[in-house]
Image (tube, rainbow, N blue to C red; front, side, top):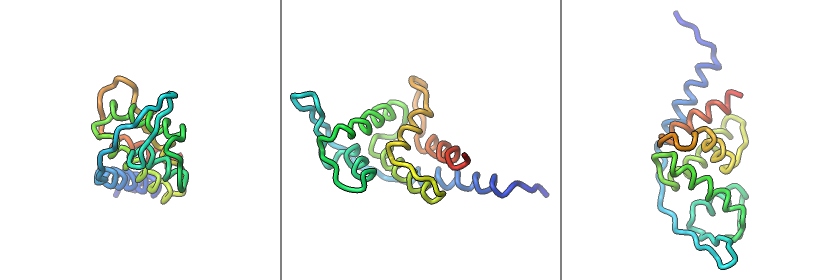
Length: 143
């Protein structure tokens, strides 16, 4: 009988669970962002990048806060690399933070987006971000 190390079995099960849960996430469309005359971007409370910033901050974020631009830029980048739309990608990032927290790893949605974006080379075609996220989660937990 084949005996696999318990940690390896747990890692494989976690990967499968992550793929399943991330693939099940639903999303809704975000509104377009408005650029102000001074070059700053004003976000709506309905924009997914704004919602991610609020989740990471644990509360209110001014819709004109320039930190929201980081979420928008990563979602823009991931939209060119992933089969999913930005709303689903953001849902997957939030779910990833929850899965990581269950494993004792604290990360923000922004850090998750950075990790997933960094895992996919530019101009390499499109991938399932759910699958990339699941593999990335597995690697983070294994460290």
